[in-house]
Length: 211
Image (cartoon, rainbow, N blue to C red; front, top):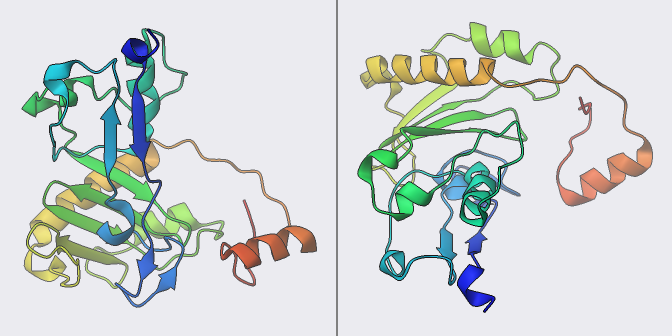
């Protein structure tokens, strides 16, 4: 009888940078090549009418926990940024997220809508004034890129200058999301053992400080 109460979720945490944007690394950049990954939900707890269907709704890895707890009939841990995907699985069109946001290990921020992606880059994540730099960065600068991800799936053609109004609206939404995040002010120097471990795993560059 366990199958009838079992929910199975299969999802990748990220893709890989394979020279799509001039980098070979462990998900260093925030483009579809690293963030557009499949999510499969199945199991006996999923109603038969919902099985075998594909949805193109925007979802996020943070949605996994509230989805599981929703089906289990228990409260999700709090605070919780994700949402249950039950209504998406039911096929309700208005249940899809309008946008998803990501922050990367190289200081990138990204906002992805159904059709477009806005990327902020150019500030090291270890910079103590990261927030100030992001908030002050001019939109029409090398710090921002806008892509029509639907028409340009490789996200190679920066259309920011030709669609400034959309970029401005997305930047405002990205700023509101960023300012809603809880941040830590704790910082410390890494010891040599930790540095070696992170260097070997490709997570760390000389001169950066974990904070």
